[in-house]
Image (cartoon, rainbow, N blue to C red):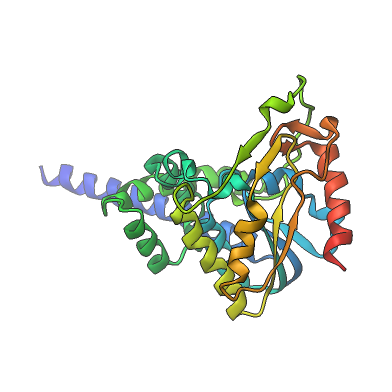
Length: 291
C-alpha cells in the first residue's frame, strides 16, 4: 500500500511538473509576442474587422494584434500590457455599430463559454485585479476560475506545438488575410441599419471602451477610432454616438469609413474585407493617419 501511495505521489508530481513546464513556456511565448516591439508608431487592436482588414506591412512602424470576436475588455488588457513594454505613440481601435449593440451581450460578452475561451487565450498578460473586476461586473460565479484554469492548461499544451514549430499562435492576434470574394449579389434591402440608443447599447462594452479612452488620455497616447468599411452599411447614428463621448472630455480622432469601399470584389463577405480590400484600405489608411 505504501509503495502504491509513493508511486502515485511520484506520478502526480511528475504530471504537475510537466503541466508547469507547458504553462511556463506558453506564458513566456505569449508575453514575448506582445512585447517584441520596443517602439511603435501605430498599434492596431480590435476584432476580426481589424484582423482581416488592416495589413500593417503597408503602414510604417505598426503592429496588428487584433483577434476575432475580441471584446473591449481584452483590447484594454492587451493595450496595458503592450504599453508596459513598448514606447507607443498611437493606438487605433474599431467602433462599428456591431461593437456596441446590446445583442452582443447575449451572443458574446455574457456567453460564459466564450468568455472562458477568450480569457484562456491571453491569460499570461491579464491583470488579475482587472479580471476579478470584470468577472464581478458580468455577474459570473467565482468557480469560473476553475474553467479558466482548465482551459489555460490546454492552451499551454496547445501553445507548445506552436513554440516547437516556431509559429505564432493565431489567438494572439495579427493580420489574417481573407481569400475570396462575396459569392452572391447583395441587395440594398439587406443593408444593416441600426440606431444605437441607451436601451439597446451594451453597457459592458461601453464601460470598457470608456476605460480605454481614459487610459490613453492618462498616458498621453493618441487614439483613433475607426469605423472600418463594410459592404452592407445602412442607416445608423454612429457619428452622433461617438460625438457624445467627446462631450465627456475625451480627445480622439474618428474616421467613419463604413461606406468608403463600394466595390464588392474587395470584400470576403458583407462585413469583412478580403486580401485585396485590406491592401487597398491599409494603403489608404496610411495616408490618413500620417496627416
